[in-house]
Length: 202
Ligand SMILES: [Zn+2]
Ligand SMILES: [Zn+2]
Image (cartoon, rainbow, N blue to C red):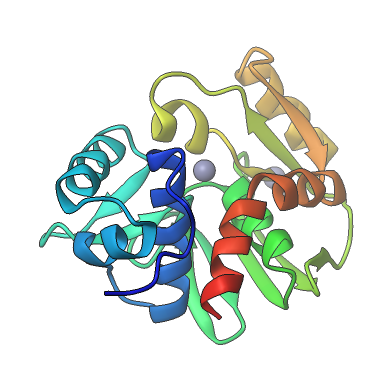
């Protein structure tokens, strides 16, 4: 029995953060029993919460029902590449890649492509700070009920102002465009709980 990492207040939030931390630490899929132990949840409660989170796109499960992705970080699938130290990961959207790199505060490399023209984009982080603030922009979708389809899929980097404007007009303004420094600042706040959980494991 592992000592609980966090008090279980909001089961869904705790599960996501602890799953993120365990994935990052172990770099292999996480058994639900390990999540239950690490959060202090009962196994049946953790099993139910994991199933609900997976159905709504907040966790990835592998074919054995183990957690393989959480809080945007995936060991298996995702269109954006995120290298954290020597760990190769994928992320569900471009904001996940920037936010996780910023919140963890280490050296990282984000590799993706312009959502409009598919030109490759790579962005290094030093101590959680992106090496530049532009010319690329992040489109942060407003999202809706379906996390992956309504938020992650349209949340991409654009190679510059022209393609950011084209992407925005095709989305009919359902979101906002940020420069890389703003995106990293927002992301650092949004992934702060995940980074704290990861820090407790390190
Ligand atoms: Zn995402
Ligand atoms: Zn472009």
